Structures are given as structure tokens and as C-alpha cells.
Length: 131
View 1 (cartoon, rainbow, N blue to C red):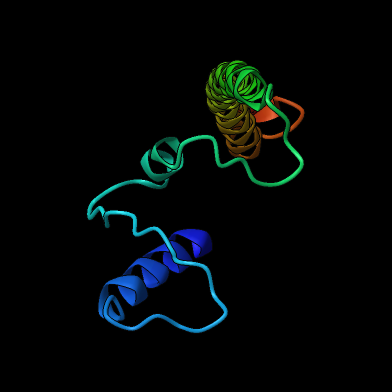
View 2: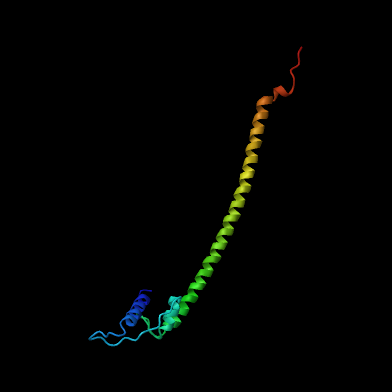
């Protein structure tokens, strides 16, 4: 994007100073300024201006990188989907265990209440005989 800004500045500068020629500088070719273009469009239109240390095979490398990235993204999404399904299953299992444990607690509480009401040795279940 910085080079795009530099190109645009150079184009603007060339258009503004078309009547003046700076001494000791070669004439610059003006490039048409495109508005609404993406960086990829600007790179594609720049015509063979490769930057960095990439050689002539960089187009194929870019395609391979994109394909690897697509595959990685697909695998990542699949792993996330599986992870979410596992979490949902685990949440359901924990809810069922919670219900079971609450029922067990209620049964224990009921048993404790019954033991207190009727006595621990069961003697209050049968009335005492008076003689």
C-alpha cells in the first residue's frame, strides 16, 4: 500500500509539474490513477514489477500458499465443529448427571426425614401394648 501511495504521489507530481522539468532527472512516465482498485488489481496491472526476493515462479508459489491456507482453514473449521459437538455432548451428560445426583439427594433427604419420624430402631412403628 505504501508503494501504491508513492506511485500515486509520483503520478500526481508528474501531472502537476508537466510544464517544468527538474534538472538532472530522467523524464518520468505517468501512470493513470485508478480509483476504487484493490491492491491485487494494482499489482496485476503494474506489469511484471516484482518486489522482494521472489523470482519468476512466485505466481505458482502464491497459488500453492493459497491452496495450503484453504486446506488449513478447512481442517481448522472441521476441528472446531467436532470440538463444539464434543462440548455439547459433554454438557448434556453433565446435565443428566446433575439430575441423577439431585434425585439421589432428594431420596436421601426423604429417607432421613422418615427415619426421624418413625425412629431409628423402628419401635415407633408398632404401638406399645399396655398391660
